[in-house]
Length: 158
Image (cartoon, rainbow, N blue to C red; front, side):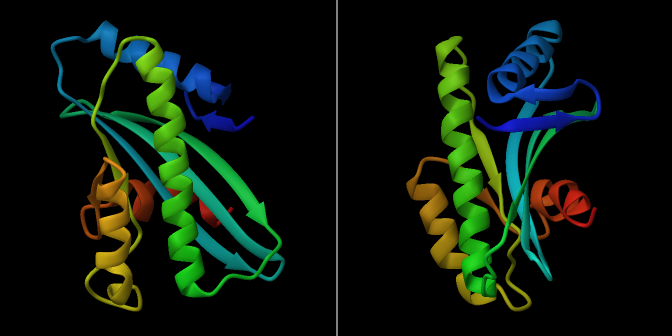
C-alpha cells in the first residue's frame, strides 16, 4: 500500500488521506476547494526519486498536502521521467477518486505536470496533456502547475 506523509497529520494511508480531505471539506462546506495531484522527479546517482503530492487548496485560505515518495534504481531519460511522473499522478488520481466516490464525493481533480511550453519538455506537452484529459482529469502545465513544480519539487531534493 502507498504511504503518504503530511506535515499536519504525519504518516497516512491513501484511505486516511481521503478521510482527511473529506473532514476538511465538511468542516468548511461553504468554502471553495481545488484538489490537485502533481508529481516531480529528481535524477540521482542511484536512480530517480519520484514525489507525488496530493494538495487540497481551500481557495483564499491556505492548503494542506500529502506527499508520497518513491525511489527507483533505474535511470530514466527525460521523456521516460515525464511520462512516469504523469503515470504516477494518474495512478493516484484513480485511487483517490475511488476512495472519495466510496464516501459519496465527486470532485474534479487537477493533474499538475512539471512540463511547459518552454524548455526541454515542450515537445511532450500536447501528448501528455492529451493523455491526462482523455483520462478524465484537468491538466495544468507550467506556470500553473505549482502542485508538481513547487510542492512535489520541494521534496525531491531531500
